[in-house]
Length: 110
Picture 1: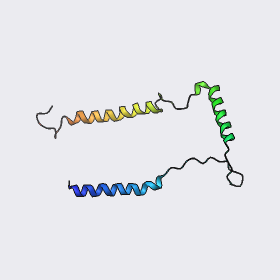
Picture 2: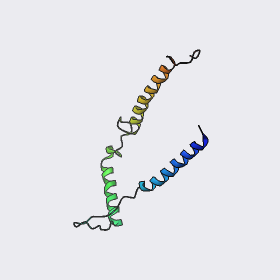
Picture 3: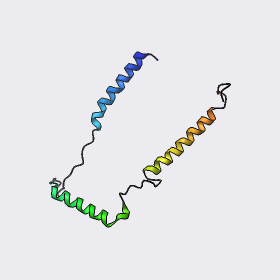
Picture 4: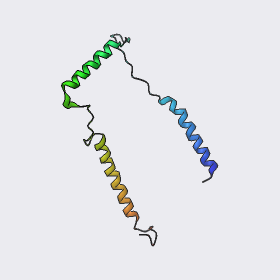
């Protein structure tokens, strides 16, 4: 491939991603109370500390509930990774095995 074309395409891709990346900025969650007419109030430190204290008490009262993330479940983090690895690994293995024989396999290899 022509190196100039490859360099130009790479530069266009970098500048395009840089141009559109500004619109994908994530903002912090708004912490405030909303009034009846839609006005926003203040979220005081005391209110935040009270909410955190209630969350800690709830977690201590229910130790079996955990964090809520089922790591070893098939719908959890590790379970989903194992399932995805098995599916894609099986497909890749089938393609590798099938690629060793057939019309376009190189003669004398395998």
